[in-house]
Image (cartoon, rainbow, N blue to C red):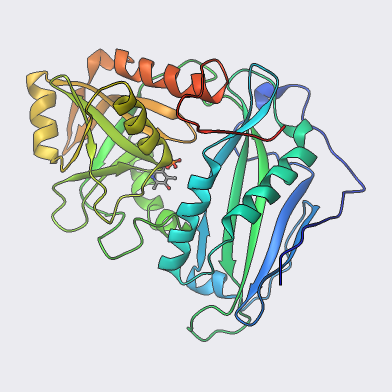
Length: 357
Ligand SMILES: *Cc1c(COP(=O)(O)O)cnc(C)c1O
């Protein structure tokens, strides 16, 4: 049976805070959310937009005990033309379906869900912030909710999309971050869930993140889970380097999250006639390049920050400064290129923008 979307509007509409400077990330939520249910017998059903609110959940629900959860993250932007747009949203839903397959959760009907997202953003359009660099963060998630404790394939699941107006990631300008290379804990191994965007990956990464924070570092740079020899990615971002004039990033190897920002940067560079490399990058190569001055720039890339320059890299008790701790020209150029497209300041030559309103 074809899915149909019903809309139940809130009786108590809220509003975006007048002062957008205190929004931060992920604290404020819009009036409505989208949800639909899935069961093995019926497939997806009861697709609806409803007032934002708490969930009722059975204490034995699968997600609470066995971590059957996947999520996505993207943004709706109010661009300089006054339109509200999404950046490559079908990429997020396609990735979510790959995550679903890995976790044994149901795949989404991508076209339907994309239409539902557009309806939701239209309904809550007043929640898209106006200040420069701000956006409406979109958080889709699916979880298993069988109401018993047996470990079996999921036969009931729910999907939600919630919206959170969020402030400029770079309120105080683009400042390079300090990152610690983690050589004890690992994030993922090939064959595990590293490629999937699932909550469990994050749960297991918190300890290393806390240790780095205690020492004054923003995030950790993960190494491969087997040899702890090859660079993989940063906490919630992929990583890129400019070594000896060449841009390179770790190749997707089965344990790295395939970021859409990563993919977009590579595609954009190639559209400019450049040849960024996707390859294995060992921590030894990186440290050597840092020591002999050929590590020109390093930056993380992800939806939240777009690009985030790395000013210092710590490894086994030593600290390496990159580009004098300053933001470099490549990071600048990539930031301007991607945000230029997202904010409608530059022509969308690669067809990445989906207009909502
Ligand atoms: C989401 C995520 C990224 C970045 O992906 P984008 O699609 O660019 O936002 C990188 N690494 C991890 C672990 C992530 O969860």
